[in-house]
Length: 305
Ligand code: GRG
Image 1 (spheres, protein in one colour):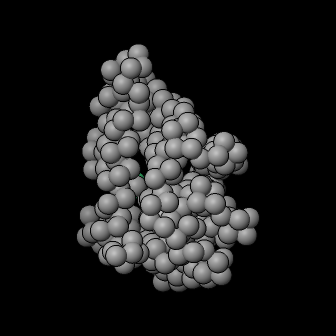
Image 2 (cartoon, rainbow, N blue to C red):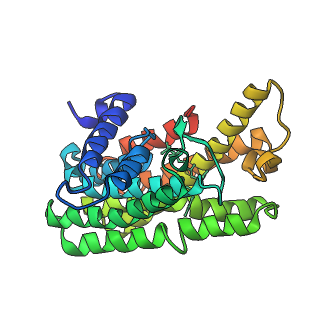
């Protein structure tokens, strides 16, 4: 049976399982690392996120090659992006940023390990991600040129013109964001950049040409924005359920969101428009088997967590 004929939920669960197994051994056992630091890093890694970004790395490699086995050598990069994503959540939850007590249904890292260790766990996850990505070449024979391009993309898209820059713009502009354009610019950096990275990285490892990489990048940018809109909608619905009434704005946490700026209906329309544009770009890119990625784009719009 071809991989794409499996039900999506089964595919997502199996890929998440492969990634979680690989993450368990990501820190070499013979390294001299304080146990507390390792525990703090693994606490957040194992807290059970959706593993969306690493699954996209694997699915993109498979889509380009048209072969479910093609993603084995992309596993180190899949682990690397999940480590970068997890570090961003650990740091985002700190008192100096969002000051959150819960994440992924568990106490946040600093609540369990203290602020200093949470900062270091985030630093450790970010730094180690680059070591892990390099293993694509060291252990899986991915051409060094390809891994170099992937590492360069990761530093850029997780970094200054990407996630870190977007988070800085968000922190600096708090309460000042007034237009959907400004909001889009922040989300493109905070959310889409890492999602787009994941697709392009998988594409590179699968052997995509430049046109296909451009299509994967656009697909990632758009589904990243759509993902963020659905995130905001789910947050708002969650709040309404908790409070038992309609919540008029997202200003409760100084957070300006799509539903706040555009309303629920327009936000849903924008999400559908972005997803349709993403799917069109991908369908035209001449990938060997784009079906699974197209399915994931639809799934993200309807997700409930
Ligand atoms: C601290 C440099 C730095 C950046 C933080 C990721 C981030 C930037 C902030 C977290 C807040 C937020 C709403 C970010 C947008 C991206 C997003 C929706 C993250 C949550 O991703 P999911 O839903 O999380 O994939 P899981 O837990 O499933 O992995």
